[in-house]
Image (cartoon, rainbow, N blue to C red):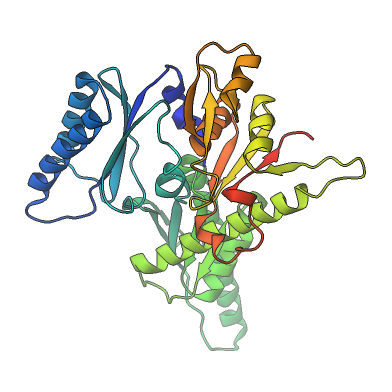
Amino acid sequence: MDLALLHPLYEHCGPWASVYVDTSRHAEDTPHALHLTAQAMARELSEQGADDATCRAVESAVEDLRHSPDPHGRALFARAGAVVLDPHLARPPQGGSRAEWAPLPRVAPLLDLAGEDPVAIVAYVDRKGADFELRSALGRQEAGAVVGRQWPIHRTSSVDWSERHFQLKVENTWEHNAAEIADALSVCQEETRADLLVLVGDERERREVHERLPKRLRGRVVEAPHGTGSRLLDEDVERIRADHVRRRLEAELDRFRAARTPDAEGRAGAVEGVPALVEAARERRLEELLIRPDGSDVHREVWIGEDPDQLAVRRTDLEILGEQHSWPARADDALIRSAVATDASALSLAPVAAAAEEDVPVGGLGAILRWK
């Protein structure tokens, strides 16, 4: 996950209200259900010690969702009577809506609920051009079209010289249109920063467009085995997007496994377990955090100071470092705060954890380092 969007959460000290709202239920009584949810979230926060102003801000923000509920849900992070950040969720929060009041914002669930949500451009290709759709967990939208040369586009079965000459023009028309589609698709990808390009159409037409795409994009391409004119169902797109996420996570896990093997001098390029991760975070060496949400260490208590690199396994360790103020926090949220401060990234291993049961970071927390 690109953690840049979380920067506003660490410009001020806590405590923070973190609320995950499930808006996936769409029915006639949805507005009333969200009204009840707004009251329940404010009540939960108040019972945990949140100030009245922050409780009211959260209640009002959840109430506002009644007018345009998201497909899946929304996260709300508030402090001092104001909602600071309210990202959309790519999937509903497990177990329904919930609220938490803590020294740090409860951001770790975002890795699953909003992190790996690849955006796909679906290109419906034929000999005359292509239509583009932008698809994500939030739905679909039109993303443009390409109209190529319209004549000639069909072959004949004659072997006469003039007909062979005509067929050559047909080939040239196909090639021209494929190049036009590839150029437009490249521009669309740059503008939307899409993670995936899905080509739908006859095999030959898909292949000709694929071959004309810039090399930088070819690794993002998936060819869908559907005939010309067919539209991909939502479940088709979801399968393609999920496969992309799994491949990316498996690649990062492989990189982690290779990096944690010590070199000839006994130094490793990856670490796992809370003590080693805390040390690496203090030294600003985190490049990418890998978190398995059900790991035994993710909710382990660590101690934090006001600055992101002020964290320790024990409170006395912070005192030795000269930190006068400290608070207990979850290990996963504390490490994510450190990662945000150093422009590192973070991934949830949940989609591949079952298949990689024996070879994931110890305790569910690991990191690839910037330097050994």
